[in-house]
Image 1 (cartoon, helix red, strand yellow):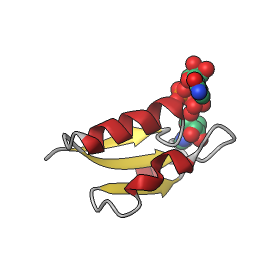
Image 2: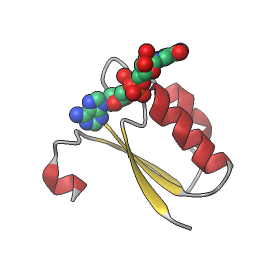
Image 3: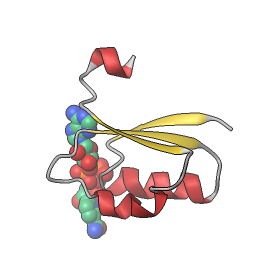
Image 4: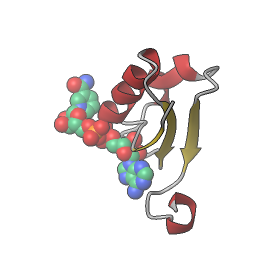
Length: 67
Ligand SMILES: NC(=O)c1ccc[n+]([C@@H]2O[C@H](COP(=O)([O-])OP(=O)(O)OC[C@H]3O[C@@H](n4cnc5c(N)ncnc54)[C@H](O)[C@@H]3O)[C@@H](O)[C@H]2O)c1
Protein backbone atom coordinates (compact mmCIF):
# COMPACT_ATOMS: atom_id res chain seq x y z
CA UNK A 1 0.00 0.00 0.00
CA UNK A 2 1.22 3.51 -0.78
CA UNK A 3 2.25 5.92 1.98
CA UNK A 4 1.18 9.55 1.66
CA UNK A 5 2.38 12.68 3.46
CA UNK A 6 -0.48 14.96 4.52
CA UNK A 7 0.45 18.47 5.69
CA UNK A 8 -2.00 20.37 7.87
CA UNK A 9 -3.68 17.06 8.65
CA UNK A 10 -4.92 18.21 12.05
CA UNK A 11 -7.08 20.89 10.38
CA UNK A 12 -10.58 20.57 9.02
CA UNK A 13 -9.91 19.33 5.49
CA UNK A 14 -6.76 17.33 6.27
CA UNK A 15 -8.26 15.41 9.19
CA UNK A 16 -11.32 14.34 7.22
CA UNK A 17 -9.12 13.37 4.28
CA UNK A 18 -6.94 11.22 6.57
CA UNK A 19 -9.97 9.52 8.15
CA UNK A 20 -11.27 8.70 4.68
CA UNK A 21 -7.90 7.35 3.54
CA UNK A 22 -7.52 5.09 6.57
CA UNK A 23 -11.14 3.88 6.71
CA UNK A 24 -11.07 2.92 3.03
CA UNK A 25 -7.50 1.60 3.50
CA UNK A 26 -6.13 3.06 0.31
CA UNK A 27 -3.05 4.65 1.94
CA UNK A 28 -0.78 4.66 4.96
CA UNK A 29 -0.60 8.20 6.29
CA UNK A 30 2.08 10.46 7.76
CA UNK A 31 0.44 13.61 9.13
CA UNK A 32 2.76 16.62 9.52
CA UNK A 33 1.09 19.49 11.36
CA UNK A 34 2.37 22.46 13.32
CA UNK A 35 -0.68 22.37 15.65
CA UNK A 36 -1.93 25.94 15.44
CA UNK A 37 -5.21 27.34 16.82
CA UNK A 38 -7.00 25.70 13.86
CA UNK A 39 -5.94 22.16 14.77
CA UNK A 40 -8.09 19.58 16.46
CA UNK A 41 -6.39 16.26 17.11
CA UNK A 42 -9.60 14.90 18.68
CA UNK A 43 -10.93 14.44 15.13
CA UNK A 44 -8.19 11.84 14.62
CA UNK A 45 -8.47 10.16 18.04
CA UNK A 46 -9.85 6.95 16.54
CA UNK A 47 -6.54 6.46 14.67
CA UNK A 48 -4.42 6.41 17.86
CA UNK A 49 -3.96 2.65 17.69
CA UNK A 50 -3.70 2.49 13.89
CA UNK A 51 -0.12 1.35 13.04
CA UNK A 52 -0.51 2.78 9.52
CA UNK A 53 -1.04 6.33 10.80
CA UNK A 54 1.79 8.50 12.12
CA UNK A 55 1.63 12.04 13.48
CA UNK A 56 4.58 14.45 13.51
CA UNK A 57 4.30 17.89 15.09
CA UNK A 58 6.42 20.25 13.01
CA UNK A 59 6.34 23.13 10.54
CA UNK A 60 6.24 22.40 6.81
CA UNK A 61 9.06 24.98 6.61
CA UNK A 62 11.37 22.51 8.35
CA UNK A 63 13.22 21.58 5.14
CA UNK A 64 15.48 19.00 6.75
CA UNK A 65 12.59 17.08 8.29
CA UNK A 66 10.31 17.30 5.26
CA UNK A 67 13.00 16.12 2.82
N1 LIG B 1 -17.08 22.86 10.78
C1 LIG B 1 -16.76 23.41 9.61
O1 LIG B 1 -17.54 23.45 8.67
C2 LIG B 1 -15.37 23.97 9.43
C3 LIG B 1 -14.45 23.92 10.47
C4 LIG B 1 -13.16 24.43 10.23
C5 LIG B 1 -12.84 24.94 8.97
N2 LIG B 1 -13.78 24.98 8.00
C6 LIG B 1 -13.46 25.49 6.65
O2 LIG B 1 -12.44 24.66 6.11
C7 LIG B 1 -11.54 25.47 5.35
C8 LIG B 1 -10.13 25.42 5.94
O3 LIG B 1 -9.77 24.10 6.19
P1 LIG B 1 -8.25 23.69 6.13
O4 LIG B 1 -8.18 22.26 6.56
O5 LIG B 1 -7.66 24.10 4.80
O6 LIG B 1 -7.54 24.66 7.18
P2 LIG B 1 -7.52 24.60 8.77
O7 LIG B 1 -7.22 26.02 9.17
O8 LIG B 1 -8.71 23.93 9.33
O9 LIG B 1 -6.25 23.67 9.10
C9 LIG B 1 -4.97 24.00 8.70
C10 LIG B 1 -4.00 23.07 9.42
O10 LIG B 1 -2.71 23.33 8.91
C11 LIG B 1 -1.81 23.43 9.98
N3 LIG B 1 -0.71 24.33 9.60
C12 LIG B 1 -0.76 25.67 9.36
N4 LIG B 1 0.46 26.13 9.05
C13 LIG B 1 1.30 25.07 9.08
C14 LIG B 1 2.70 24.92 8.86
N5 LIG B 1 3.48 25.96 8.51
N6 LIG B 1 3.25 23.68 8.97
C15 LIG B 1 2.48 22.61 9.31
N7 LIG B 1 1.14 22.69 9.55
C16 LIG B 1 0.56 23.92 9.44
C17 LIG B 1 -2.60 24.00 11.15
O11 LIG B 1 -1.99 23.69 12.39
C18 LIG B 1 -3.96 23.33 10.94
O12 LIG B 1 -4.05 22.11 11.65
C19 LIG B 1 -12.09 26.88 5.39
O13 LIG B 1 -12.91 27.08 4.25
C20 LIG B 1 -12.89 26.89 6.68
O14 LIG B 1 -13.89 27.87 6.66
C21 LIG B 1 -15.03 24.48 8.20
